[in-house]
Amino acid sequence: MNWVPDGCACVEEIQDKEAGTYQFILMDVQMPRMNGYEATQKIRQLADVKKAQIPIIAMTANAFEEDRKHALDAGMDGFIMKPFRVDEMMKVIGEVME
Image 1 (cartoon, rainbow, N blue to C red):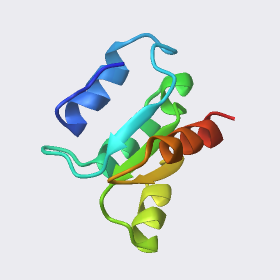
Image 2 (cartoon, rainbow, N blue to C red):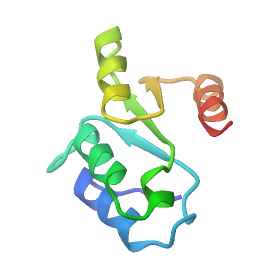
Image 3 (cartoon, helix red, strand yellow):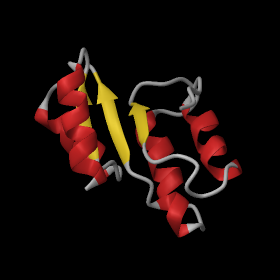
């Protein structure tokens, strides 16, 4: 597990690490420098297909259906609303990892 301060750092982290280093990404939607939507789109454009296809789960306090759609349209695989319950988070991670 690794925490990064912003979307740019997330993209760089995925680029710099060997494919398979991380099993999935919990992506905060609202981050400085590059938000989670933009970071997801950059990751999806990586030349390394394994890196580009890493499961990404949005984490956001925005709970409207349009926010879920925006996350999925950006290329995210799942959606967790904050504050979240651990059982709900584990359910979404399980669904995404199937």
